[in-house]
Image (cartoon, rainbow, N blue to C red; front, side):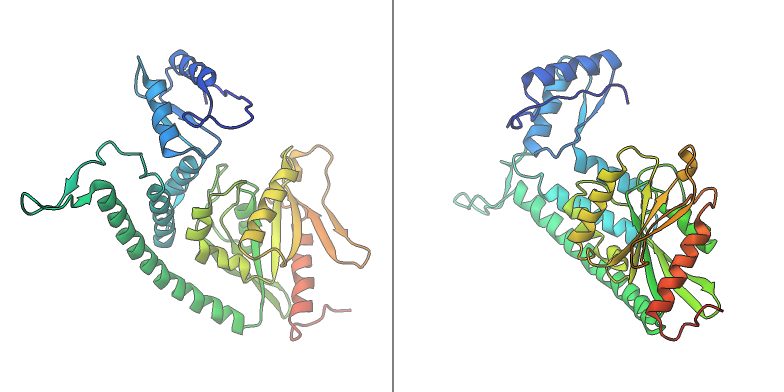
Length: 339
């Protein structure tokens, strides 16, 4: 990152979102740092992106402009590893692209058709583009349905086992995959980066004699997550919707953790998972001086949150005990703990 430019307006400028003064400031910043990319932390229209790129590139090298959705889609495209993940990202990008065709092309007057001198105007290029995107979207959705059927079969098998179903959710980069690996001894990909995990991973977790659960690591959330991504990742997010319990992992060391908790809860409400029981895991306490593992319960004894560190392992035994406690309450066949 070279420079951050901020501003405040009563309403976005219809042509460039930021207004002429800020556009000039952005242009100067691009020249100063020889920057070729500008990212807006807002959604822009196709016309605004086109106008901004034209203004910022005037008299200098070409500058590309990305809005918030463009950036998130680009990150998702780089992170996707599995066949399903790549299909989901492609679907989201195609559906996003379909909204950018209006007034976003320079060749819209090209037409096809007209077999004689009096032939009709035929099909405009924008109509061809829409149709091609629509056909590709249909094919991707059909392929995703096949993958979803396989996932549903696997989920049904877990349901028949009667085990507690747990999903790990949270803001991106909160430490979900690290916690998942520590609990299950799995090797899910872990990195200090946004959306490191796109593909859900489910493992059987042994919690003690006669007590087990299935636990899933899921894609991280972020504020203002594009609706197209939520829709495209519907089959993946069903692991969350079908869960009996959510482990909501929060980066306790992040000064904006309250905002991140709210953002995650907004997404959970949007996919129909707002009423699923949660245990909040205040993760990364190893980064907070003096912080110690702790289990917080309400007056009725229900676990509300656990302070822990997935990296150091502090507090993870309490997490396992909490899961075992809920599993015994959920599964009547589970053995009670020894007296």
